[in-house]
Length: 417
Ligand code: GLU
Image (tube, rainbow, N blue to C red; front, side, top):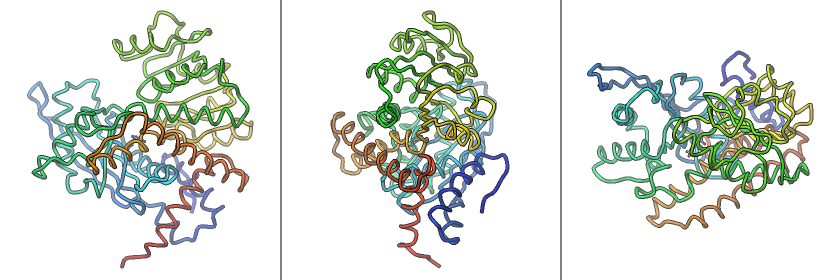
C-alpha cells in the first residue's frame, strides 16, 4: 500500500501505512482512508484595485467525513497546491480523531499572495471563493476556519457571504470568527496554548524542568507567538525565534512582549534591536532543550536533522518534519510530539465555538481553557499509552489512535451502495 515519491501526501501515507500495518487494518478500510472523499477546484475572478481582472485558483478538500462534518482551515499562500491541501485535509481527519471531537477533516487554500493585496482585494477574493464552494460547506457539511494568512476578519466575510446566499445569519458555518459574531473566547490563542500545554506534559514525561529550559521557535504567527508568550510565563527561556524574513537570538532570553510590539509594526521578528540576528537554518542547530517548529511543512529534513541538539521537539506546525528526519531524530532519542497531537488546540476550540454557536449560549474564557486542558490531557495520555503498548514513537501512536477511531466508525456505518 505504501506509495513513494516526493509529494507530502506520500509522506503522510508513509506515516499512515506504518500505523495501519500495526493495527492490521483490513484492505478495504485501508483503501477508503487513503483516498480523499471530495476535491473541489475553483477559479475565482477578482477585479483588482488597478482595474485589472485576475483569476485565482482555489481548492477545498473534504478528506474524510466518517466522524462528522469536514473541519479545517483555509490558507492563502502563493505556494498552495492541491497535493498540499489534500494532505492537510487528511491531517485534519487524523487530528479531529486524536482530539476526540465529532468532525471529519477538510482544508481549503487559494493560490495568492495576500501580502501584496489590499484588504478590499482579499475581501473580494474571499467572497468569490465562498460563493464558488457554497454548496459544499455548511454547519452540518464542512466548517472552514483560519489557517496560514487568514484571520477572524476573513472568517467574518466567509460567514457573511454564506449567510447572504442562505437568506439568514448562520454563524456555525465557520469558526475562528470575531467574538462579536459568534466567535469563542480563547480561540485565537488556542493552538499556541495547546502547544504550551503539550510541551509542559511532554517535559514532565521526559523529566525536563521547564524553568530555565532553553527554547527555540520557528514561526511567530498565531501559533509561535502565543506558545512563546505562554512558555515564557511558565519560566522557560525563549532564546531564539525565526520567521519568514529572518530570526533573532538572545542568550539571556528574548523579551517576548517587546518582540510582539516589534512584529506588529514590521510583520517580522527580523531587525529586533535587543537580540542578535539569526538565520532560519541556524535556529535548528542551536544548543536548546526544546525546539518548536511552528511555521510551515518540511522544515526539519535530513539536511538539518543531524545538527539538532534539542531533546524535545514539539510540532506546532502541520508536517514540519519529513519521515526520514523523524526516524533519524527518534533513533537518536529525541522525544517528538507530533503535529496531530501538539497542534490540535485550534480545532478543539473551533469545536467549542461550533457547539456554542449552535446552542446560542457562550462560555467564559475560563470554561474554554479548562475544557481545552481536559481534552489535551485525555489525548496526550491516550497517545502516550498507545506508544507504550505498541512500543512505537508518539507519531505512530497518534496515527494508531486516529486510524483506530475512524476505522471503527467506518465499519459501524457500513457501505452504502
Ligand atoms: N487551521 C487550523 C488547523 O490546522 C484550525 C482548523 C480548525 O479550527 O478547523 O488546525
